Image 1 (cartoon, rainbow, N blue to C red):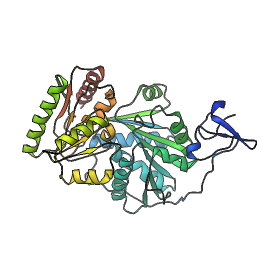
Image 2 (cartoon, one colour):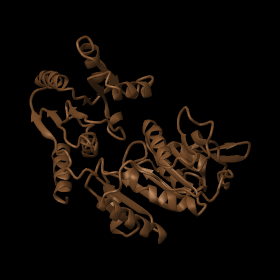
Image 3 (spheres, rainbow, N blue to C red):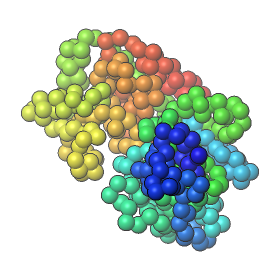
Image 4 (spheres, rainbow, N blue to C red):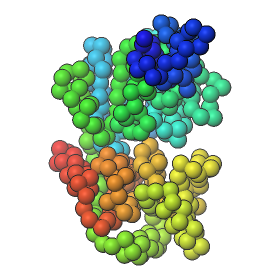
Length: 382
């Protein structure tokens, strides 16, 4: 008794319907009866005479990384790209996308979060204007096939046995990390090589590299060549953190610099917003926020001086000249990977490569210390 889609063998997750057993562990993605493979839908395959264009040429170190990636992929090996936030992970994938599509092979790009799917789709369409680049995520499921498919991890259930190259961004992030169901669905969607991207590899990934199951390519230098922003950590009581934050935001407004204010919970985000909106141009952004794209667009347009947000914006978003502040950085929800990603929002733009990342905490947790050490080590390799 084994599900051919998710690999489930636990009898507690099987149910019998008129003598036919089916898996309930992955029922949310459609029913699969025991002994049957998930349906493989026909997909469009064509040789695409395509090439990509970038607003800036790749740096010498990016070119070296791309060459290594292509060598491993052509040898039929899976690749893990360990690159710093803002190092240009998306740009590193474009040569592989071009090479596979020119051979008539199918390429998918899977990401954990919906907002990032829409951003990557736009960037890929600009880079490959001759291709039909489609986004498949909540609210965008009418068209599910194209030359290049950008989708959330959950949407990979639609593509059983499709991709010759499956690019997987943020493999260390929720909801993919430690999710055996999504991992099984992703593995079945890929019939060729996997190109995995992360700025914070976990122990499991690094062990696979050590066992030579996956080849790793590293890139810690951002395109502008400036070092990564290292956090400024200030210890003080929680009440003092609020006062310090208000002083910092007032100075930011005077200097015309926008800020992302990260907080650990939705409740705290909403509470701060109710008070601060009375005297500041600000907005709140959480998983409960409606019209998420509208809020982000307005922030890009500088209608707000700062955005109060949870970890939902720790990845993917790029805003020119942004600074970051983390309130209660010692909260358990802020693990090392989250802290690295949040401060990674700072200094990404070539035109504004500097900035500040401030951690406010009552005490320095292990995660805060490890975040500081990890970023410092990356800078030491430059």
